[in-house]
Length: 257
Image 1 (cartoon, helix red, strand yellow):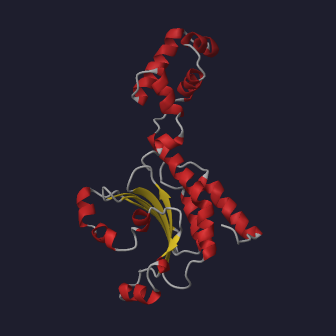
Image 2 (image 1 turned 30 degrees about the horizontal axis):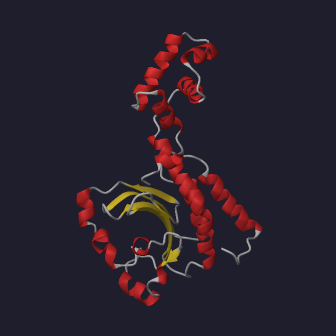
Image 3 (image 1 turned 180 degrees about the horizontal axis):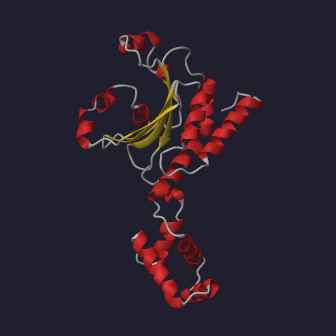
């Protein structure tokens, strides 16, 4: 990643994206503000973020930001029948979309022009207005075979994405991955009340019910009641399992991402 010097504007733009990624939004795969700023940084007409399972032929989410209106969109997950009829999956292993699966290389940031020249791209477009002539793709390896995330910037016309654009995306990859998995954890984590979280914090510290009751000025039976409610909400049956469910590292929540 050596060879590029960032000016103040570029450094600020990257820092703003990192800050946007740090805001956990459990409603969407990536915060919309992060996507908006990445699109501006890349000067892309459209930016998509999606999750693919190439073994199960499952497109489990799709998120996009489109010029010129900063239009936001979320796609519904494919059903098995929809995946079977989707031309994308029917031709996936015949084209260049399978690059990370075929090579095992999830580190390289690729562009469409790495695989096909502009004349052939235009020939394939066949005059369709919304077809894109340029793209740049960032891959994030999943934790089971076939599963991965990809962020793709698209341009309808104009100059290709540059080595600097690839450099930006390599710098942003860990922040985008962390943002996705933090949001995933928020979506998967049952909501506990403030009081229940306070109890769980003391359980995590190894305190007994008697110690918790004294600290919170409660009857010991009330502490047991809080714990029983927590166990039911988390679908667990022990203190250890509850602690693991509430405080486990986000890597566990994103283990299949």
